[in-house]
Length: 96
Image (tube, rainbow, N blue to C red):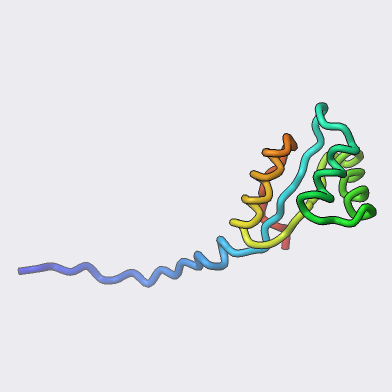
């Protein structure tokens, strides 16, 4: 005789939990110069000079700046790229 357990009706909304929006955040550090951070933002993200400067100043003055928003996997790639440039970056779930 085979006993079967009743199937639980548990709804996991994995797609919503893993999908966006997520953010890549660059943090201030005592090592990198402001002009280097601005250069990285222009080179990697393709920001205009004005947008790169705005985000760099946010990093400098506020201690952090959101430089990208989207799918988690893409934000993790951006954070890894920032690490390759020597910048401190993390990924976080965007606030609703």
